[in-house]
Image 1 (cartoon, rainbow, N blue to C red):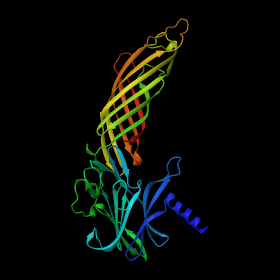
Image 2 (image 1 turned 180 degrees about the horizontal axis):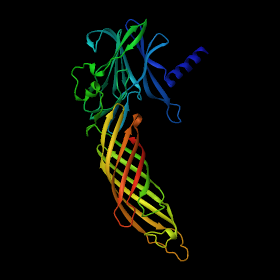
Image 3 (image 1 turned 45 degrees about the horizontal axis):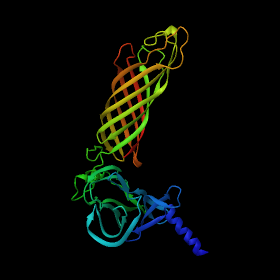
Image 4 (image 1 turned 120 degrees about the vertical axis):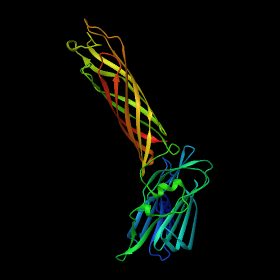
Length: 388
């Protein structure tokens, strides 16, 4: 019976994300747990890793830190996340470091976790602090490093570190742990720029200074989004014209923006004979329309921590078709189908968040090119997207 209960607890430990790996400071004053959270895969009974958490605690109740730790690699259109992959090997060790790692020196206990996707986490725990870094190995071609978590208080999350080739080792990230009022606490640094790394390359610059930056063409990502246009008309030519909604989709490839909108045939207005105007002279009844629009422009990706902002100014053109459905009343006429061309410009701002989702909002204005038409049409754009 006891063996059965122990087996059930062991299964729960691996399926619900209890701590799986741990390492303590050499003096035993605090402990670092690395636990993998798991969730059920679809309707199956298989639990898969979803993310890894680092928990630093002194004793049972005094928790110094509880944050997600992870890094994602994109290669050949696929993403490989450290927290979402199985650990195939772990190596524990102890040592003594005379050369300081960002002011940490002396005895340490270390733990190295190698995931099945070629991402390695190296962790060193000193009496006075913690240091960790990631290693990327085994990717034959160029790859991108994405979504680096901010673990320590003085870190900042990174959405896109850059494009690399060959194996890569990130700089050490550290935090000092001191004793204050009889308890262990994390010592926060004022600026991450105070860190000093040796032999770092250009791609490590964001580690040193997590300021806002423009993502270069090589590192830029692509996204696709769908949404809607809320359109309304300006001018006195078409009085009583109702607002209309368009279904739209757009695509960003690095610095290139393109989009397409379509308004299905729907009722736009009701024309009264005493208030008629061109092209509805003598027309009474329900007028319908459909609309097709295209957009092409430039997209500038700007990174700020976990978020990537795409600013996309563009040119747009539309074809608007008006006609009347159904039978006309006696004494009135049915208009011939009319086509109208519009041209204009707009801008869209899209924010890409973690987990590859994005939100977009924009505005555009188009002028009618013909005569006896409204002066223009405004559109408010809302969309939801996904990073490729």
